Length: 395
Image (cartoon, rainbow, N blue to C red; front, top):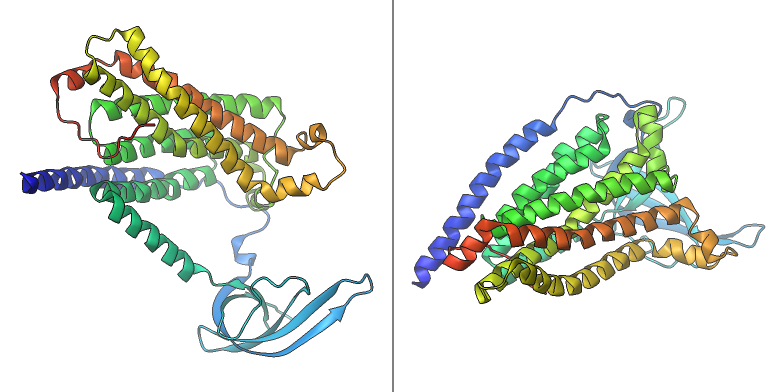
């Protein structure tokens, strides 16, 4: 019996993986639309070339004091590049900055700036962080597989699929000049269909969650558009957006990119809330088939309310954590709170947080209503049909 169960689960994963692979190929082909807009202004060819190397020596370290009293440390650093070339450069940092000083043996990134009047200029850019990032990712994958087993396999494939859709469909089409909101919603639909069915299996419960998630995303997109207009947000709250504007010129929609980010960010949390609500309704039907639609909705919403509270709090804390340096900067300023929230860089985070939270709140009643009236879900629950779910969980 145990062997049959293992074989059955493996067959489900194999089937889901096969279907997903076919869908990924279709999406990849759809995503590579011809780029209709050319970058204006700054071009990527003008950017410095990045070369990796290793610090072989730090022959000189000296302290400098400027007229305004600021004290810095100037290091002369010798680096051997990947091609064997040895270069000498320098790096200056504040004396009180003791975080991760450069040392012999460190792997670093060097930026090379070509010059037509003198030798190429080399500047120490940063540390090479890739090995540590790969180690962290490997630890994440190993832990997911060790704890979740078959569910973990589906989750990792779903994660890879989401990244593939983002980089092969959403980003190329936004760069090509298509409407960022429509692209984000369309790409999110692909992510929903593939990741939900792959992670949670082919069942009415998953179908209900897919529909609820998509409707909540549309509501989120509409609200993002409305309140971006009402608050007069331009989308240029960060340096990265200003840099993109310099590259893309007039063809770039900073506001649209901001709204697309809200949609995709909300999608990352909706999976949890919609699947849970769908599962709750199904389990309530199994526990008491005599429950009417009104009672079923009321009891499922009792659980959903707790879910809303925890997820909204999570979302607020995530955005607050990301904006913590900015908030600390404003705390030390002379401005009052009502003045601080009026700055675009703060207002954008408020709109992002509240619109995303509203989308999550709406997902609970939307998904619950669909689940209550979805006949196939009730049929599966009452007749004990096989639920291929891999990852349903409750709060």
